[in-house]
Image 1 (tube, rainbow, N blue to C red):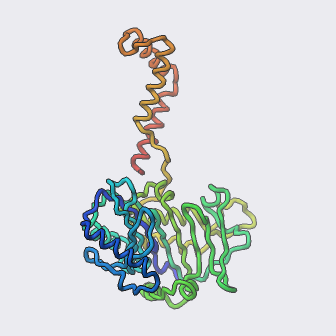
Image 2: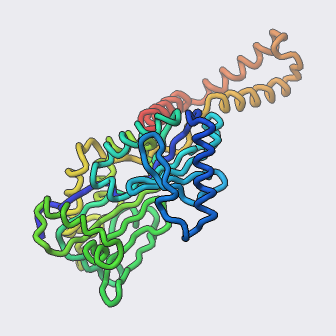
Image 3: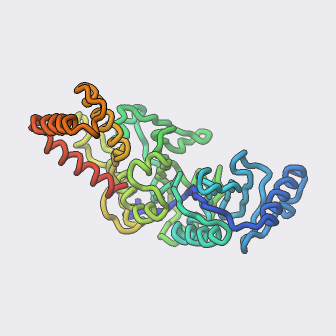
Amino acid sequence: MKNNPLISGVDTLDVGLCVGRYKLSDAEVNALRYAKEQAQQAGDCRDKADNLVRLYGQELEVKPGGTSRHEIMLKNDDITVSVCIDANGGKHYPEIKVHYTSAMLWRVGVQKAWDDTKNWINQWAEVTENKVSRVDLCTDVESPLPKLSHDFREVNGKAITRNRYVSITRHNSGLLESGYSFGSGSPVRCRVYDKELEIERQSYKEWFHDLWREAGWQGGPVTRVEFQMRRKFLKDRGINTIEQLIDRQSDIWQYLTCEWLLLCVPSNTDTNKSRWSTKPFWKLVQKGVALFGKFIECVKRVAQVIPIIDQLEKQAVGVLASIGAAYRSVNVLRDRDSIGKMDYVVTRLLRIDPLFEGKVQKRAIKYATLAVNG
């Protein structure tokens, strides 16, 4: 087993773009719709080259599929772009959905992939906002697939302690054990699998061998640890835009491999899993943080609800209206006596609560933290 991982990076990326308006002419929109109609009519009989269009320097295939909202689907070897033609000032967010292929992300890196796409789309659309809807981070290590017991007692971390139970599945390819998946169906999931076997029998991405050789691969077995994160997981940790994702890749990896999920060495004398030592294989996986960029701090979960001033003010008005009604004050704002009574009641209520100032300070700290992390 090597002392360091071979490669770390983004293997899958989906981004949603909010569009204020399109710069496409009517002729360009009609050409895209016509190309889609032709693709639908021809089906599998039509040559792929007949569906190609050139849009602001990019050659893409117009796919026959799509949805009622994203009617146009454009695809090449690097990206798939789904377009909702009716921008309507961003009311149909995301108007544009971009899916990056693994090949592009590993060839040029996530930063250049995003820069190139952004510069191209900005030629024909006014993008006002972007949000990451899915990202897969992974690390490849030159090591055999770790063997886990039938009850998976080696598994530890917040994925277990917080949810009490996380779905764990053992996978096989024929007679060979091929890997494990943790947290299927949740906003974050992990896959640990034999990458060489996956290339040989499923993806056929033999170009990974070149990346591994550049990192010193000697031809031994390679295991991939991959975390798939959906929008909810990212949003809960203050990561919304692709710029935030790029800046905090290492912070995410540190959290996922050091807190969310760990593979430990079971102890027969100590039942407290938090004191179990980490498997050498997993320590190697944790080292992948250095390949994702500068580590700042582990991502933290932020609260879900930030108070909206307008809502709080409306609630306060409702309470004051009830107080006014209790004092039989019909014209509260024009009756000085009524105003005085209400002012006295509010002041008295605040003063008789000895914990009021402390409550204000605690909420102030909480909301300030939300503002920073959000």
